[in-house]
Image 1 (tube, helix red, strand yellow):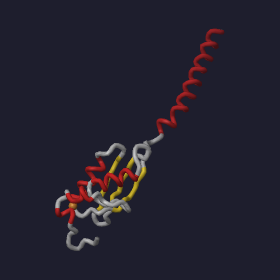
Image 2 (cartoon, helix red, strand yellow; image 1 turned 90 degrees about the vertical axis):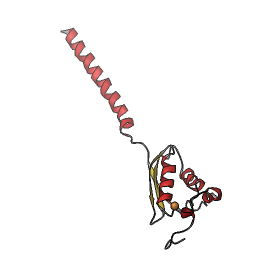
Image 3 (cartoon, protein in one colour; image 1 turned 45 degrees about the horizontal axis):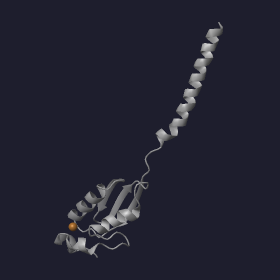
Image 4 (cartoon, protein in one colour; image 1 turned 90 degrees about the horizontal axis):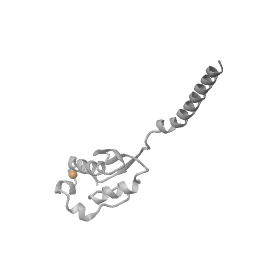
Length: 126
Ligand SMILES: [Cu+2]
């Protein structure tokens, strides 16, 4: 009889330890990867600009999603703030020849862009 009781309490102890352990591990499992969204005003003109900016940013480690809206000239970026800063994202945009908010485009990179991406299209406000 004593062995059974001991066996029971041992099993109970084991369950208690396991449940505490599981509960402790839970917050880490639930914690979603950090994500921030930033909207950057840029000098994109056409579909080629859109593709160029999206391709460049998507290739960066820590960037989850990029959407360039040509009508509003806004680059919406979802990124992991642990991996990179908005400043780094803006720098990447300027380095391929486009303005990013208050940061000015890299002139050498801009000069290498196709002509259609340098000259504003008719009806474009600059
Ligand atoms: Cu373009």
